[in-house]
Length: 95
Image 1: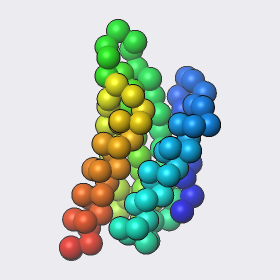
Image 2: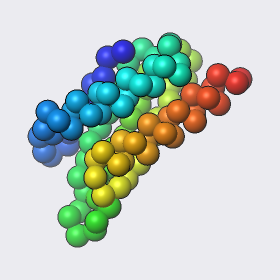
Image 3: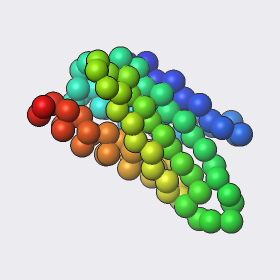
Image 4: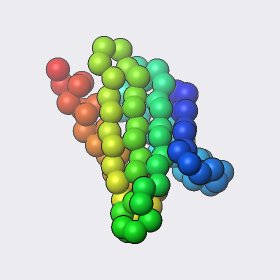
């Protein structure tokens, strides 16, 4: 699966990009028909602690899957978004 990562208003370091690639690629274990995934990283206002937002869009046959999560770090937000997408995949597979 191809993972496209966009970081808005900052440059994501290599370690973060590798972490995101690894986590998002694990979703293929649950649903092999994922075509591509698009990840958007945003750092919102610095005045609040949970200012890191991760949006993940999975291109799958039929309707695309999407999750948006916010946390104090991109890694934690990625974990939350991947967990949400895993639940969406399970729901899609049961239909």
